[in-house]
Length: 336
Ligand SMILES: NC(=O)c1ccc[n+]([C@@H]2O[C@H](COP(=O)([O-])OP(=O)(O)OC[C@H]3O[C@@H](n4cnc5c(N)ncnc54)[C@H](OP(=O)(O)O)[C@@H]3O)[C@@H](O)[C@H]2O)c1
Image (tube, rainbow, N blue to C red; front, side):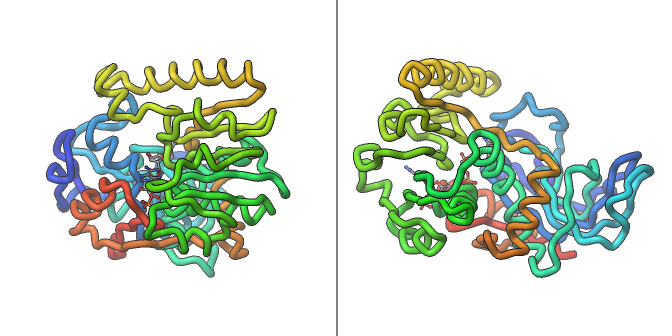
């Protein structure tokens, strides 16, 4: 099979595309999937840059990638929910799922059936980001109709899913985006959209039930006062200090613990003020994937496929992803 290979930690220049042995036949409880599409997520370039060395499975050369959509090629013993030929999509791991390859073998519970009216590009685009949003807005808090929610980075992979999901449950959605994406985010269902470069959002916002910092670097301390008593601030980051800042202070191997400590301190401060702060972790739960399938099938959420790249262009996709600006998802087409 063909796959992207990372030769060592670094940037896009450490990636190459090569012929490698096929992913192994599935063991008990596993399926092997012929991958049609996999999406590019910031965690992929962060893993490749060496920021998440504690996640297992990183022997070099390594096939990166977290999520995918494709067709079941073989099933292991004990797998009743899928059979060869089924179209599926899934999140293998938040970081090291080896999906930038034409075949991937993984536990069956990491997949759900792909709705027939959703393309492989769309399904791959929705997996990791959809799981992140559901982890935040159904488990971190249970977002409900009539609540006011602010979503940062509303045009990005996570934010574009979050804005639509929040709208679909009947919440009133406010969001931020770059100047070029304001109309795009309004089109996804946000009632008010702030340009993050020219607006101090924290100074504009009040009476919120939920803040979902999909960008990950909002300063939680400043935003706590925008929440109603009992309100919740959820972040994909650490509540203020960027990964790069934390890595400078604690080192590339241990920065995450510094971030966790920051969030614990913020939680304590927020609790004294009658608010909550929590960090979101994309957990590959089957229930989330099944719910994503229903949201996509019904049209409640539309996967926002941005740019599609051939596997041979993966280094360019990584470099584009690292700009930190997006409109929906970047997708790698595996040419199945
Ligand atoms: N904890 C977890 O489990 C988890 C899961 C998923 C993602 N994440 C993290 O969440 C972050 C976002 O992921 P993603 O997939 O949505 O990334 P993405 O698709 O690359 O989008 C990045 C977004 O950030 C926005 N942005 C850039 N500068 C900004 C600023 N100063 N203020 C507000 N927004 C700004 C961009 O807006 P414009 O393009 O409009 O300029 C863009 O929408 C990443 O750091 C990622 O690693 C964490």
